[in-house]
Length: 352
Length: 245
Image 1 (tube, each protein chain N blue to C red):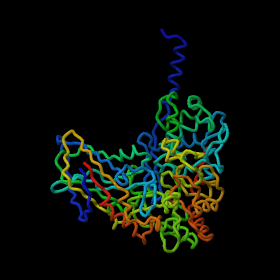
Image 2: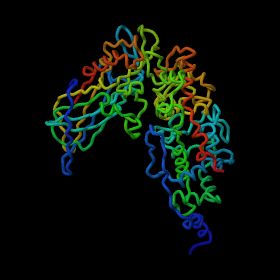
Image 3: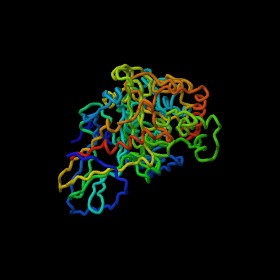
Image 4: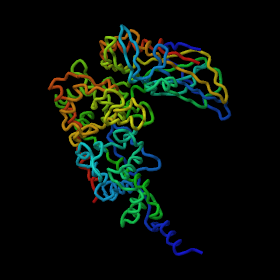
């Protein structure tokens, strides 16, 4: 015979019924700039209008954090091309070890996420900040409870994933929704560079010189800035990890931040970090994994100097001997990668 | 048994064989290995170079394409394209090498092995955005916008130009462009048996690959108007690659 206690447990386990809410998701039509690679979606998490809507709400909702002060958007602000304008990001419990990376075109990053590549997919990545003791300092068990008891989210989860009861709301569905939203954040393809490549406009002379330097297109005319090896078009990132001479280290074990090496366990990977996109740099200062550079000039001066010694510093870094004019031309070209479309698109902004 | 791989200038006949359901098949395992003067080569391992110099390698990669077994009247395709990464951090990993495993290879006696170093012309005319993320050709880090070509090989490291000083001259020797695509072939008899594995080693001796190369004068060589160094690397390929059964 069932006891009252057993009945209450059964009710809690079953949750509230959601089957009265229609479930008819609409596949999301991805719209990419014409020279972009295909946006690959996991077969168990295809983008839908409803999934993206839910993911956008969760992205901007501080309910994911312990004290309801921090959301994903706290470190990935649309006004900063989905970074936060700080050298090191700040969470519930203090300052983190690195700055936030831009989420523009993040859905096209297939070889690891975070500066050190520790998350294989967007779905994996979305799970991590919630339980990070500095970032959101929450537990997923508690977040799941909050979402299940929320006045609005159960319906959103039903519409996105077809779940039949609130008990089915879990961290994995939440992460999937957030990943769907993040995959929808695409550069508009309307930067001056994009329009130039499509043959719609010409670049100014200084911008064009910078373009030639960036891609080493005219070695007999302008020097090679070596940029495209790590920041190649169309994403201006290469999904790879490099030691770009930021940290001085006499050996492989003395890096202040081991970066990729801590994840792979391979000592020769110490000091290597993911090469981020260079699109929208106007919005994403400060620069580098620790936000040490505030201006384009500081970045270009760093690369022009060849960087600091460490045994595995990329061999593409050496003293470039640029003139002031050449540095300015390179910066002028970087400015052509500015596209405010992703920054101002209302579909990417807070729904609250 | 060791066999030098010689350059094949003619186009390969490509006759794809179909696999019948009851056909006998085996597995072919090819281990690509880097050595220097015959010894397993790992990154950041200081080696003696020409003219009293010393060097370390930091990145050793190559695009290998059209990996095929040769047979009477055609070929058996093993792998279309592979980014072979020989940048191992220790000698044990270097000795093990980079492994390509091909299952369901028709069991029979083959007359040799053929492989391309680089990207064949038809694929080289495409761009990374044309390929899915699990294809090596989707890697924009291996595409030369300035050349309109994929990068076929990356040989990077540091050089001590005086022999007892710091290894402080970084070098990045990248080959590419259609004329520098090489097809190498070896003609040992290779037998694939039903239900069994044929294991082969393809060994790249980087001392031989860089023989006669003046790294000091041109350490950053990725200029389409200056191909002497990378041409020399490509010319050294037949001498530097050995097939071991």
